[in-house]
Length: 327
Image (cartoon, rainbow, N blue to C red):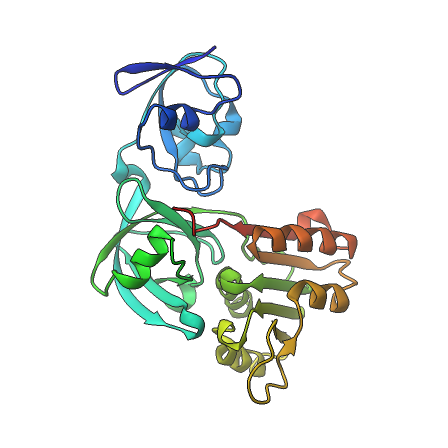
């Protein structure tokens, strides 16, 4: 049984238990969110000992060189001494420059980092309320088009501690810390003629909006089909913006759908489940590149559908959303 030393104390790690679980059981407030190695909130630093390389999977090379690792993915088989890294080594301060509501109650949050921040449109970062409470959100902005401002689309959950704070308490001029970026769901530009399928549910549109605009501004010539699903018309929170974008780019095709019948006459909005619509219309995806974003159940279902429809596994990019309604 391995022993970890942290904050001057020693703890035995139970079989199958992660470093994060061990420290949380000992009542330490270790920053964390997804507990699945996705959000990178639980980064810690090795002082002495050796860790399995899997505990560093997805971390930037510079972080790995500093012996940083993910506590939720670290299951030690030997004794370790660890500590929390200095916050200013892994987080970037930002000023709130925009805080406005889109339809459906979606918050469009804009931040300006206080130092250089490199990212790819569609990646995600963790936004922090304080030293321990953080949640991951995808980037909808494009550096070439939006300058040094970062854009996020945030849905408020009634019992979501961070989303409620961002929506109800944060104001322009406030300061927020972020950490990241992470994720591999972004436009690579390797084949400008390759057809693209972008499909997202709810605020799963956010990273797709960044990926879409990045592809267009880089001169993508292949056909681009963007599917966005929502419960009702209000949930199609960038409907007019995407209509205008499609009207000015012949290779862009926008496919909105809702579960509930829209009021009035919305001829371009299908009343259909997004999964069913994709299964019906996108049956031949050989040679396509696919981007999927949204709730985990949606992403899993569509990843399987797209593969069976002919898309190669290496051409399916997906980031499932973490449930931000957790306490």
